[in-house]
Length: 316
Ligand SMILES: Cc1cc2nc3c(=O)[nH]c(=O)nc-3n(C[C@H](O)[C@H](O)[C@H](O)COP(=O)(O)O)c2cc1C
Figure 1 (cartoon, rainbow, N blue to C red):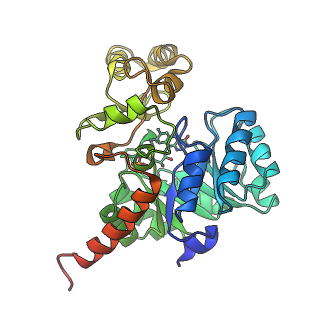
Figure 2 (figure 1 turned 30 degrees about the vertical axis):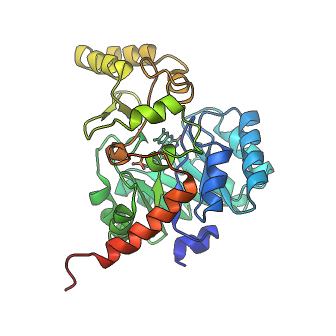
């Protein structure tokens, strides 16, 4: 048991990050059943769909389930109210100011965790009254911080600045990395890409199979002029790169918005358009060469964490 497992009422300090189009009720329930904290990613969902996913997760497990609410979407407030009405007790907010909803959520006596990408944001989240912080390095899949701070340098800086529990994210996919993150001062880890590559995730099978071929240079953070996001290199990502090299300022922002259009991420990650779709994934994908069940991921993670601890090459 540690601070984080106590805060959430879980067995292992292992959290499955909320992921648009990827983390529905089935994945969240499988992670919570395995002893971690499963999160339904509300980002891509209208409140009615979110209701279906939360209800599904609750029907599959009686263990705690959390919901991730990215604050950049207009429907965030409605999503929060829907989740509250279904008895959700743990909220992970991201992509926005922690001041926006923390006191509203705390008035409903729930646990609030905010996702940050700089030490300063971690401090202001603590000041806003959150219960814990996820500090996410630039290696991570999904939206990234503009400052390009990696997990290795971010975690110790955040640890030195805040007192509340700290969750490390970005580039963590196995027991060795989990041990490293805890050594840097984290109380637990949040993983996205590893859980995307499981049987229970709702990523399209063709997307998962494509990712098995990933190399260390398969991902890039693009769209820094609008909302930075780490993408798998495909035709769509190449086109974005071309636009970034050809335009500047307001013109660039507009071109990026126009080219992204609507539903790119849905077409790519959920429906399997591997050419023109937006494919979000973390840099650590280069290390992942299988698509196991969530239960198998947990067995391996815990075994490898213990092994890595024993195998440390230097005990001073
Ligand atoms: C496909 C995908 C979608 C994501 N969507 C979200 C999201 O909706 N909200 C959020 O807070 N983080 C999102 N993330 C970030 C994850 O929650 C997690 O913090 C991140 O993946 C951790 O880094 P890793 O991919 O190296 O494990 C997403 C990540 C991926 C790979």
